[in-house]
Length: 318
Image 1 (cartoon, one colour):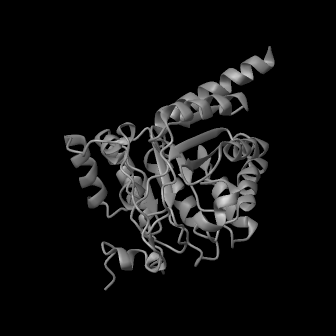
Image 2 (cartoon, rainbow, N blue to C red):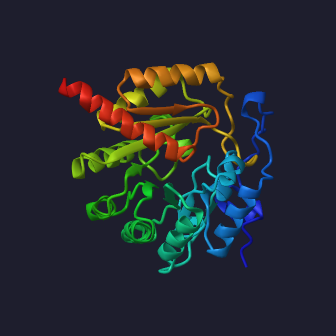
Image 3 (tube, rainbow, N blue to C red):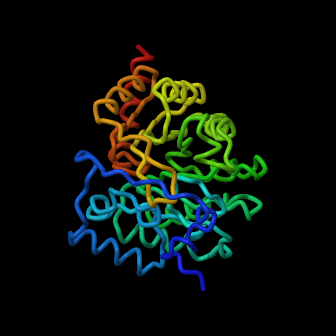
């Protein structure tokens, strides 16, 4: 039986890789261990509903803070991914068949947690003809039925091997925010995100706007992987050419010695500089800090995103 707690079986594609030293984290990126009552209650609800969270699977440093407030990012379609990105701690291999009851369990957990805003992500499912698009749509519909006042943000795979109808299925289910992360600069894709294609991911985000111009789109990258500042600024320009509304930039943290090495820890002042540059390029919303992750403070950020769009529309009408 496969034990995902053992690194060699969790990441068989990385077992042959030489170890990369894990540098000591600077003070600005340290977080406290979770101990709150809210954290324990969230943990219990997730376990009772038999759900997987990307917070745990990806080893997110913000899990303690988010879970203490009842915010957990659900990861649907299993805990095993068909891709083997060198930065990611989610297990790699052949996934199990889809659980048709999972959308209902996710909706039940969202209702129990009383979420005003929920983020739903998934593993890559290259083994499925539609990449799991219909499963995303079923989950969105189930949440709408149980919690009609909850806004829904999805963080999807790239649907690289799927027909165009896969993306159409997801967009037609009307999530409030469609997020797909570019993850890094194009020059690092072969090493960091093998199996993915930078311009395919960029076009995916553009197609969302083609299908529904009113839908908010969001994308993010990590820094500290070996990229240079001009490359990051070019990614911003590429995202704006695809009419992406919301940009996130966070520090890459190395899960194990077998993962991609941390090239450097980016100082908070540099993140502030990226944020200023991004707003100057026309993004409606930017989150750029060492601990920024796709779903970190997602509910509060969505409220600001809507306000910023309304403000921009008001200014355009004057």
